[in-house]
Length: 138
Image (cartoon, rainbow, N blue to C red; front, side):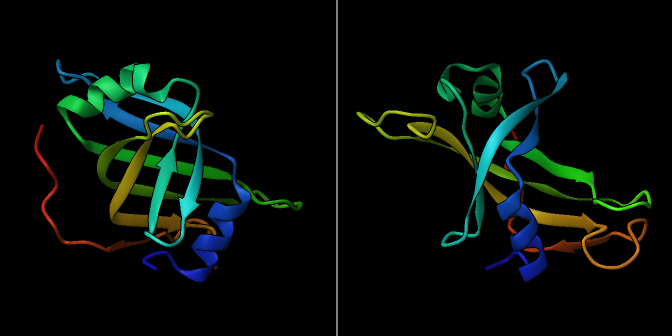
């Protein structure tokens, strides 16, 4: 698993993230999405209603480079932001005949992971390269 135990725990409890794509004109776009951590594959799977019919799906067909963020403020009296940013390459997955939000979904293969506030100082994030394969050009 490429995610640390602390990152896995955080991702398991979260239900909503934001996915950023770039369209064919080079304009960025970010939208909230439901997701799950696929622990077996070490990837994020972002779905939603009619995922294959969305603009983000169309964007990723042209340029599979993607960023995904899950963040919040930790409970307590102090201001403690925390979160994970994942940059990687999207794989568009469809399951013919399946129903529900995961009949078509975006599988995010991480290249870098940046986490902050999950351990220690929330203003001292840690970035690491987890897969050195080149990012695909769109």
